[in-house]
Length: 304
Image (cartoon, rainbow, N blue to C red; front, side, top):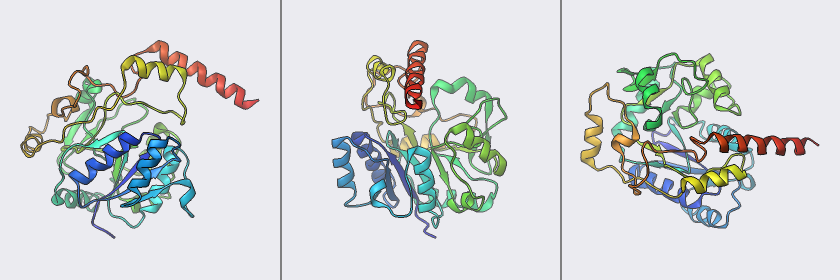
């Protein structure tokens, strides 16, 4: 098994974001391997980006693979876990995300050792926490010294306690359980609960979603989603890479201080309201209802 960290980047029609995501990995974790799992993007610029990336890394798409079938995020994740079955450490990340700080080789070794020493651990979460969830996270996350990570106490939420779609894992641990990614986060959380301990949120995270990005749901945008993107002025707002001194401050903080993105990261667009938003319809009941109505109408016509 390779001792290098493998990043599996999941992509669809967001070429500029994909470029930034891959560049951040190459800058911050230069010894890592990267594979892009693209869900058959049809945007012209994204296809140009994929073509350029394919010159220095593997790009997996429906038309260029023989044994893995792609289809939606969780289908792609299943392909990726099987693709990486011989790897020790794999990080799943999406095109609208960024690695935000340099990672040292000792950190990779430490992550590997966590899986060696904790057979009940299948998932670690590499991201900073969202300020939107500050009250909930401060009430439910506690530090676990054996993992150097935070674990969530039992809550009534349907997802996020045992599983996250953004993850670090050891593929063999999942494949030994005949793991098959299910089509929703709550369903995967239930499955993970059967076999593993709660997910660990890294004390010193290294990745984060970009704020206010254009979004896709099922590869198509509803009218409500398009309106929401215009209303929130969604765009491309990457983060500044943390300096060595900033990383030291992050590592040396008290163990009871949670790593909220707004407290440690700087977005290039300093005018964005905090806490940052990560989904265009966030905070709009009207647009959410309009979105649900359009999806219901689509489903009705497709059923005929």
